[in-house]
Length: 117
Length: 179
Image (cartoon, rainbow over all chains, first blue to last red; front, side):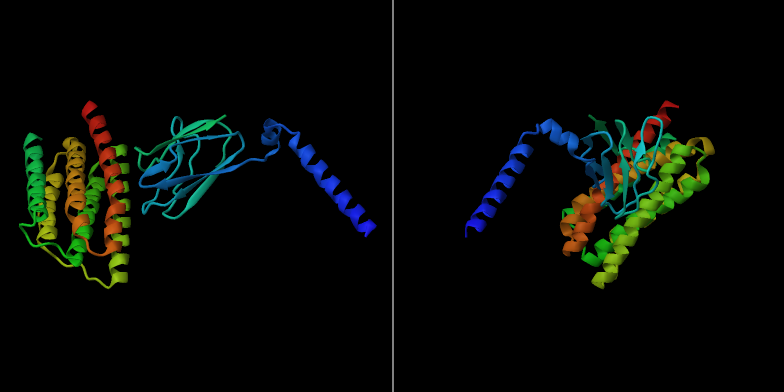
């Protein structure tokens, strides 16, 4: 019984210290410790949704085409990169290193923006 | 050019009058098989205009736009055919689809007869007018009258595509006018 009580105490202290140490890290440290995140842009009703997305350098953005027609995602200013054709129901992803204005080169009125913080 | 524009607008206005009168229920209501026929015909008409542009235009913007019209409207036709096949509905010819086809024949002849220099403007002007008329028909006539929920949804899903096509055509229209 005493041994069980001691064991319970040790576990309690261990858990307490674990939570206490973790609680001592600042939100900034937590954000730094977090790895790259994945964001989704829905291509729906001939729009990029959201049209503007803020991410951190190295995060991944996935574009998913929910429309019945083919789309693409292309850097707007110099066409530095493009997804190529994304068929209906298809998707394409890219790790983002810089801020970009982009558009669908097939339907030029469809525009979007990625901002790297 | 002015004569072509006048005739073109007259065709569009006549189409809207025909569609509008149907909407006002002076004409018999369209059934789902008839709505399916109008939807497929309206898309096929624009695919046919695109085919003319792809053989006649030398302008890279116009060629790209025409290819998009051909691809997108073919995709919509394929969706409509897949749906009517699933629903076991046979599209039924009717006054609205026949009017669309007869107007399209006149426009096709005018486009083919256009001198090379005037073709791009004539094609894009027609695309602007045609998409406006089709959007009006789909929103004002086909969607309200469609009975089957899946057919209604397909028509609703197509509207943003038609509006993006219209905005794209208007953008090209301005670009061509500046030249």
